[in-house]
Length: 456
Ligand SMILES: Nc1nc2c(ncn2[C@@H]2O[C@H](COP(=O)(O)OP(=O)(O)OP(=O)(O)O)[C@@H](O)[C@H]2O)c(=O)[nH]1
Ligand SMILES: [Mg+2]
Image 1 (cartoon, rainbow, N blue to C red):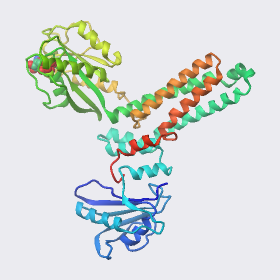
Image 2: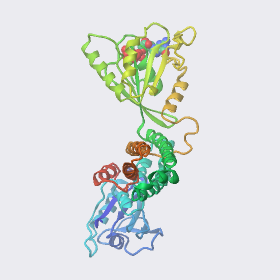
Image 3: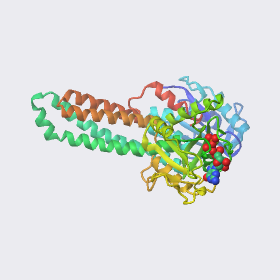
Image 4: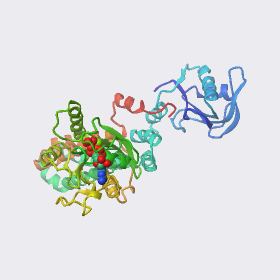
C-alpha cells in the first residue's frame, strides 16, 4: 500500500464560484492541523480560513474531514472548498504541499490522474468496472451516457457480472468434485443438470453482452462510413446528418478525396460519420489514394451506408457493391440508402431492393428513418434505455472470451471430457473476473487510471 499523501485541485481549471482541493493519505491530519488550524469533526462541514505556514489566511471556505476508511479512497481525506479561481486554488494547493508530513514520513505530493479513484479501487471501495464508470460519468457528453455511467457506478453492471460468476463457480465446484470419481461421470452429468446449467449461463452471457455493447456504443460512438459511386451524394448526406457544411459538395464527380470524420449524436448516442472518396476506376493519382482510404474505412466500419442514386442518373455498379459487401465485417451492418429521392418520380426508385431507405440529402426526406435505423444498429431502439449501464471495449472482449469458453465447455460435455470441461469453466471465470478487476495486471490498471483527470 502506498504511503504517499496525494493532493490535487479536484474542480475543473478556470473560474467558478467554488473550487475544491482534495487530499488523501496518512498525512491528511497533519495538513488539516496546518491549513485549517485545528482538528475537525469527521463529516461535518466547518467554515474557516485556510492558513499559510505563518498562520496567515490565504482563502476562506468550508473544510470537511473524512476519516478512513469512511471516505472515497478509504484513507483519511480532507476536502477544502474555497473560491474557484486559478490563483486562489493554486495558493491553497501550495499550503497543503508545504506541510511537513507526519512522523511516519509520508511524502505529500500532487496526485497523478485518477489516483484518488485508484486508491478507492485498491481499498475495495469500488471494483474495476465501477472505477472505470467514474471516468465515463465525468466524460459523458449526453444525458443518456451520464445515466448509463451512473448505473455502472452504482454497481448494475458489476452486479450482473457477479451473479454470472456465482453460477459459474457453483458449476465448477460440482464438475471438479466429480473429477475424483470418474466412474460416475455420466450419472453425474444427468443428475446435476450440467447441460442445462451451461445453457443458462450462455443465455445470461448473451444478454449481458448485448447490454454491454449498447453501453460501449454510448461511450465510444459507432463508426459509420458513407460509401458509394462519385456524386451519389455522400458528402451531402454527411452535411445533412451533421446539420452543418462540413464537406465540400459539387456536381463534379470525384470531389471528396480525403476522408472526413464528423461527430454527431442521434438521441444522445454518439456516432463518428466518415465521408469518403467515391469508388470508381480512375487514373487520377490523388483520387486513387483517396479511394485506397475508402477501402480501409470500409474494413474498420461498424456500419456502412451504401449509397445509390434514386434518380437513375448514376448507374449502380453491382460488381463494386459486391466488393464492398465482401470487405465489411458483417453484412448485417450495411444499410442501403437510396439518395436523391426528390428527383425520382415515384419518390422511391424501382431497384427491387426493399430494404433500402429512400432519402433526400437535399430536402431531408427520409433522414428520420435513417437515423432510427442507425440507432437500431447501435442497439438503441425502443425501450433499450431501460437496463442501461456503461461498458467498454475491454469488457466486451472479456465477455466474448467467456462466451467462447462456455461454447467449448459444451463441446467437451458432449464428448464427456470432464477435465477439459472443468478447464474451460475456469478460463471463463477468469475472463469474467477481469471485468471487476479480481484478476487484473498492473499494466492494465495503469492504463485505466492514467486516463482519468487529476483530482479524481
Ligand atoms: N436533387 C438532389 N441532389 C442531390 C442530393 N444529394 C446530393 N445532390 C447533388 O449531387 C451532387 C453530388 O453531391 P455530393 O454530395 O458532392 O456527392 P458525393 O457522393 O460526395 O460525390 P464525390 O465526393 O465526388 O464522391 C451535388 O450537385 C449535390 O447537390 C439530393 O438528395 N437531391
Ligand atoms: Mg463527396
